[in-house]
Amino acid sequence: MIDPYSTDVLWVVIVGFIIAFILAFGIGANSVPNSFATSVGSKVLTLRQACCLGTVCEIAGSVLLGYKVSGTVRKGVLQLTVYEGAELELMLGMFAVLISSSVLLLIAIFLKLPVSATHGIVGATLGFSLVCRGNDGINWGVLGLIVGSWFLSPVLSGVISVSLFALVRHFILNAPNPIVRGLLSLPIIYGVTVFINVFSIFLDGPTLLYFDRIPWWATLIISLCCGAVTMLTVQLVLVPFMKRKLGGQSETGSTQKTRDDEYKVDSSCTEVNGTLTGIIDNMVPPAVKMVPFAVNSEGPQTTNSNEETEPPGAVAKHGQDNLAFSLSSDNGTGQPTSEDKAAPPELFSFLQILAATFSSFARGGNDVSNAIGPVIALWLIYTEGSVQQKEETPIYILFYGGIGMSVGLWVYGQRVMKTIGEDLTKIAASTGFTIEIGAALTVLLASKIGMPISTTHCKVGSVVFVGWANATKEGVDWKLFRNIVVAWLVTVPVSGLLSAAVIAILREVAL
Image (cartoon, rainbow, N blue to C red):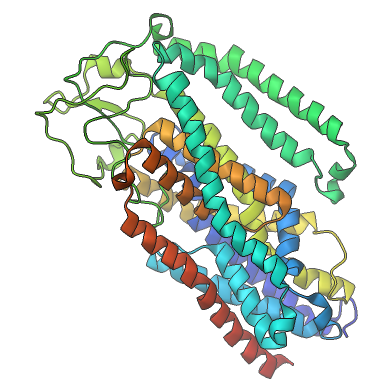
């Protein structure tokens, strides 16, 4: 037994907070930039703007959504009753989780390995508890649900993304006048996205913010009002702005192209540091290049059979001038024609910003809880003197985790985002938008039910599903996909072994 606020265990809490900040820093440096990398690579956002948006979204997501996932991480996986009277041992176990997860993540960043921080946390928790209490220390039912969600989440994310892409292709890309359809869709997409986010925040929200006292019908009204205001604002502000920027094309329709022109879109949704880069060899078949808002009434433009096409997996490299949403025509000079300049990829660029902010918000609600869950356990055991941790997840600790992720984004994430100009997978802007939204919706749903899933899992699932649906099974680099899955599977036992080694040492030294 320990007394509340015992000075004997204060060192564990202090060092634990420091290590938790390092873990959050690593997640912010390695994972958060993926949400905004494509927007920065396309020059739609500057690095400073992306970091500012990322900071706000990550902190907001961690505070408003992270309370449930952190509860699962700190006390859902473990059978806390077996640690009654052994509070210090449980604190040392959570300390071992933080150390092993941080070491694993930092090694992965250095070696550019696509590991999952969620897998690391869960594996480390499993490892230390098996050493301390064996099978009796694990809540195998909850662990089974978590592991099952790791397999279900990429499938769900992929299905959502494919469905969204099918709608975009049918109602916008293949429409007789895609520009008009695109402008009409902007308020709807923005409004629905805001509605979903607001509804997820207020429905059964944080107790400490009194959101749980709001009835479901009031939550629905608030969400509908916010969505309606957003739609009206976009219709009155953004749509007229886009019409002026397009120079009247929204009234006349897209410029007709000839079938001898080839359009290439270099864009979107690339996980950096080796995670998703290259998973799609060629999202569009060699004979068909889909161009957002640049198709005629007969459908997508095809290339001239005599023209040389890039081999599958080729990555467009234009140095620092690479525009991820740029539209270029191979007219023999390497310069875009006047017809190319008339095409408006900016429509999907704004949607890409929306998807990036949504993704960052959802990521903050899940990833930060993985990093902060163990340190919340340390703090509550320290303040209560009990392993049960009956108090609600403190908002200020979630805020602390959000700050750690944001610092990682500002310090190292800018470097990660810069690589997007030279390390792009060829995915059309419309495809990237649907991938981001599908993954974000899945992560948001998992955060609301308290499941610590991997955001990278969801992104990979969306990329593979959309890539396969948009082309053929040869459009996906299955060898790279297999390597990523193997890396995910290896993460759990490796982090578990690290955690087991650390707790074995700590039990000999500190107990």
